[in-house]
Image (tube, rainbow, N blue to C red; front, side):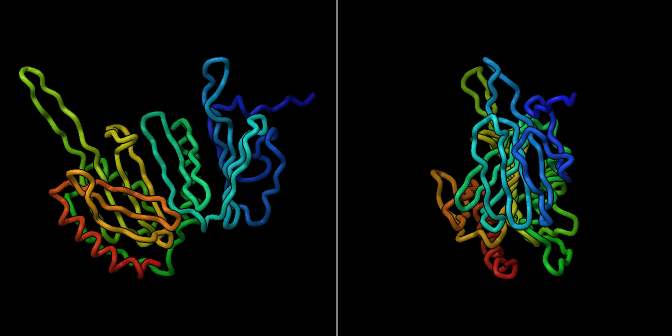
Amino acid sequence: MAVAIDSRQYRFGFLIASLDDYPADFDAVSLGENFRIALFLPRDDAGWFGRSRYPPRVVMVSGDAIEVRPHPASREHPIGFRLSELQFIECGHILLQGWLRFVAVRYDVTLAYNTGSSSCIDEFLAELRAAVTPPPAAETAAEPTRFGEPLDLKFTNALRYELAPGECARIQLFNPAKLKAWRWGVVRRETWSAGDLLVLTSRRLLWIADRSLGRHQRYGTVTSYAPIRSLQSWRCGRAGETSELVFRFVRGSEWRVPVPASLEGAAAGFLNEFEQRWGMAL
């Protein structure tokens, strides 16, 4: 007698390369000849009354389309859109908390996961990245034009980890995390500002930060990247007592990258260089 499969009991994610890998308790699907890759993400650990914050999901990339399929028992509806509609992708990992976020023309989808599944997610993201920001006809390696401060070890490793084979950094702007200390009588307190790295590569605009929910994250990073075609405008503006670089996308989403007063000149230089190279990157 066949044993019923319940993917809600799975604890780790895995890649789906063929129908043999596809969870049997999900709705039937045909992978088709344009199938690229798919990823199974398990549900959240059950909390009170056995409930989870999110169900198991399958994320599938086929041709120029991506689809998120929730477990049928969740009664959530599948979400699908074309890769050409993507404004940007965000990937975060802080200790055991990880997430993927897809911001498209009509959707803003966040998929949480436990970072114990990171190895298969890295493979999935490499394939997705190649589909969303394919390599140009020719990529010539050269030292990038650097603005701001030299990269520290954390951001050096984060950038090296993110760049695809053959992908080249063209210009970069780096503002490292900084320790701020103050004293009131015998009481001393220390806080950290988060770091930000902006990089225009030969394929995309990349933003790496160690900030989540407005707070510095010592043990994690949040990486966002956008195809050059999705950018509508960019500017340097004021944000209270400091400045910020604002990148606006075709459908209204924005990146707001903080810039301290000490790096306002560097930020202006980055934008000037970015404007010169932007058209060449399309």
